[in-house]
Length: 303
Length: 322
Image (cartoon, rainbow over all chains, first blue to last red; front, side):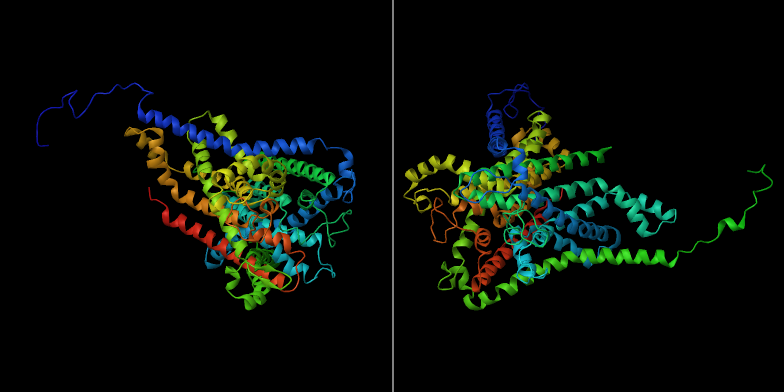
């Protein structure tokens, strides 16, 4: 404050500008330009979804028929046939994966939230879980190949639906543990105290109070994990392999829709390529339905 | 309670001290041990993966040593293997796809979090990007083979005729190649980048935004100088996670990259990645080829591990205290 001259409106220091919005100003033009670029980027980002869904609907949808689900794929060079064995195979392999990963994942999540003292061991499990989530899916196939397929531990069988299911379970496990852990953390501590207060044991508290209270987030995560596993191909190529026949139990090679798409897409035969589109249609519909189911489940938590 | 002269007679038998039966204690400790065992499965699987891949790779490590990384021979007849082409392809496809996907993903996230458009449109965009993440990569690969690659072929031809003198575009596009693989990788990692950027931008405190507007900046002035710097750690972490995903991505890339082990600097030529090499050859390999593939798998694991750990470190290191 060197001078005491009062503020002069209209002086050079404060040039007078209108307070109304002036769209021709440089900053406002730049603003509009950048907003348009962002909108353009967003449009480019959602464009592939539209195109993929469109082609899957058109190319796969027109092949929909009952025989698609009741017949076997044709030998190379022949027309017709269906993907019945692959639909059934995907369901079987995903069920095996869920049966393994959900109990282990929920149990592990319960340990992390309810029992661990957040010491080094649970830190180690949490970090290990994050690392496992980042392991490329093909590596889990290599792992199961090394442990189960090449050693033939299942009754001398090498490639089998069970091996494929285990490979998928390795991929599902981190997601299930993470969602269980996060879901249980959201349960108010007062609920647990209330249960202990009326004399419940820790086991009863977890089974009757905490887990039911966290059902919504856990179920959402589990459904998403199943949807992701159902579409996975890489871990199945050399664990579950492929089979042109109907599934013969879980200890034999099995056809799945994802491996069928991979095998048939690169075949030079029209009929096989069409079946690949049909399988894509069925797979995408199943996965989108699972995603919508997960959204529906998670909508309950806001009540 | 002074009027009540006679307090109700307590029946002593009604208040016996209940001791927990041994069976209940057994169930309790048993459940604790069970959950501990189930949590340990994660550690066992993780160590098992490293152990299996490492022991499988030992033979190749002993035979080829570190020159495996720098040589590009992949010759099952003479049993001479080098993974340079695959490592190069893995790094080039993932880094270039990241270069395209980051502006697209962050731009989309900004559009979703800023109130430029009606909320309904923004929510719909967010939902669609999430659904894109749900599409299996093998379906994207099928789409890439039959729809995307033929569609972009004229553009690639144009690139070749205009920029054919640079080493990046000096081969004629003949179908599968690195460029389509990069584009399909963009489609695959866009949802990850968008989702993480959106969460990061949503977590920037509203006060920062209001403060920026209060001193008279425009929307994009606020975005560039206040909101993006505040969210940069989480966004970078998300970008690194996407990089890890891009390096390990198998199916879509395998179907469209051409699986050639001949080294070429051109992005229009067929190439290979570690993951696609594994997908193509692992089932039919035997002898030292299996070991060489395990060695490549080990390199891929180390790469993704380093990237993922780096992502965690960046999030911790760069986070602003506001």
